Image 1 (cartoon, one colour):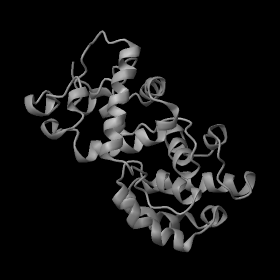
Image 2 (cartoon, one colour):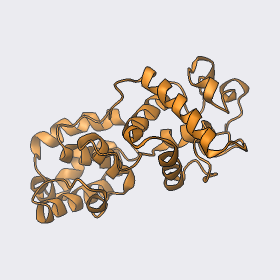
Image 3 (tube, rainbow, N blue to C red):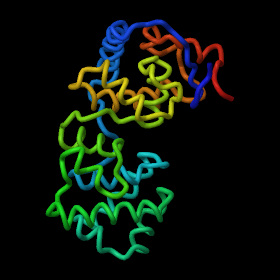
Image 4 (cartoon, rainbow, N blue to C red):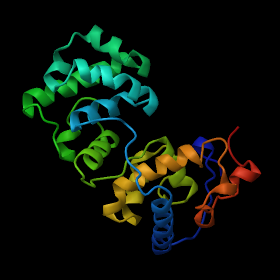
Length: 238
């Protein structure tokens, strides 16, 4: 069965215990490949990372990293970001796309940070997801990268695609179901590796296991991947 993002979904009878053992080998392989895997969004503090993560939706890290230096040079605090005229903020972030909604989310989140959290980005999942425009994915990035807290696993398009191809998710038949995929990954991946896994899978998805032309022939994880031949056989969406 072929799922979203060119993912081949293969029905197996692998037990959870067997998945954990295979996941352990995959994790070891990722640590060898990407020992320094980290968030690609340029930032100096939790607030900058929060804003950059909001901007990264439907955009690329490269585009966001071109926008944020000037943005943060002009607007250094949550209060400054909340109070800047909306049109000025939209102009600064225009190239990231969907700038109307992103500006609204950034200002809503920053206003709440300024008024309810004394200008500091909260460091708990429960508080972060109360901020406008912040759901679990963004909260996981901020908590794991800025605060060193493994509260969950970031599931973006790359992580969803690779988790499905590697068959590290089983409750989801849809590789875009981030909630189920995250839940499955959290069950088989040690908590201390949750943040690293997200960063490493994103890198591997960009460099090797792409959506349309996965380079299975040069993938060092292929021996642990049940769908390792899709790059050669073309069993993916056109």
